[in-house]
Amino acid sequence: MKEYNKFLGIDIIRVVSMFCVIFLHCASNRLRVEMGNAGWDIVNYLTAFATCGVPMFFMISGALILKSKNTYSIKYTLKERVLRLLIPMIIWSVIAAAVRLYTDEEVALTAGNLYGEMINFFSKPVAVHLWFMYYLIPMYLISPALKSFTDNADGKVVRYIIILWLIQILSFTLTGILKEDSQKALVNINLINNIGFISGYLGYFILGWYLFNTDIKISNLWLIIIAIGAVIFIGAGTKTVTEYNGFYTETFKSYRSIFVVVLSSAVFILLNRIKNLPGFLHSIVGELAAVSYGVYLSHNVIIDLLNRWGLKNHSLIVVCMTFLIASVSSVVLMMVIRRIKFASTVLAGVKWVKKEN
Image (cartoon, rainbow, N blue to C red):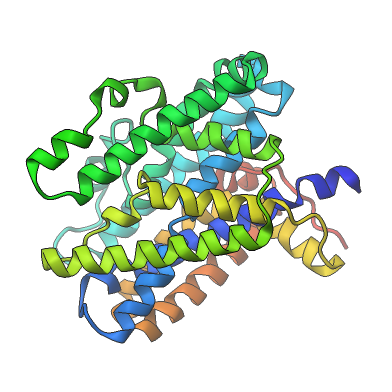
């Protein structure tokens, strides 16, 4: 029971992240139309919070993979982890491409067109939501080296790497916010930005491991205040730059924004501190966490189909309806697939669970 509770927080983070990502994709169209009214403001602030979803997916991957002794095994990493991600990703890429052709009124769903959609699979995502995998899988590939680093490096060295990454994130954020070229030049710190090892999202991977294994001396109250403050700042900043530019601008909601890093870290620490839940919630969280990868792969396909069938997510009510239907449908679909031998591995990326009588 102690070991189960130890990772309960990670399961909760996984579930919260899953629903955050679904909501972001349900709300994306709404944010680009009819700006400046109450409905837009509500969706703007809800998505401001939901931006923590993807970063926390990176963080829990880092927390678990860099903790596991199996990570030292290159064979285990490639066979049990990379392939487990890659095979379902390929299949859902084909499905997503087929659905996009089906929903496109100008391009027919044919074998030739499907091949045209898939030909660039190894260079760029076939569907917009799959971009995440093109960063996560490389992290898995180098995880044996990363584990060797985190296991043997002094705590100060790990913090030093995280600080360098945060400086890079801050530079990227300010470059996106500031308007004058002279101002951008002052904050564009290429002396650090050109350190390819920590560029992009790898910092989240290492940060997740660090926060998971470090006793952060911040009270829950302060973490809540920080999270709420970050959401308000992200939402208000997004509205300000959107009104200034005349079109929806995601600078403050970028996953490489310092504000999103602060929000994601605060929520990660808070949720990871949860060690007990009522029995029925324990089971629900465990079941949802187990299918989260499959839900991530499949949910946007369902959203595309809902749009094709007339449920356009251009109002707050329809955004909520789309979110509810996409969430329930993708979760139920993966719950069923998880209990089908062979399909559980190739479609959901999880081991087969035999249905109990």
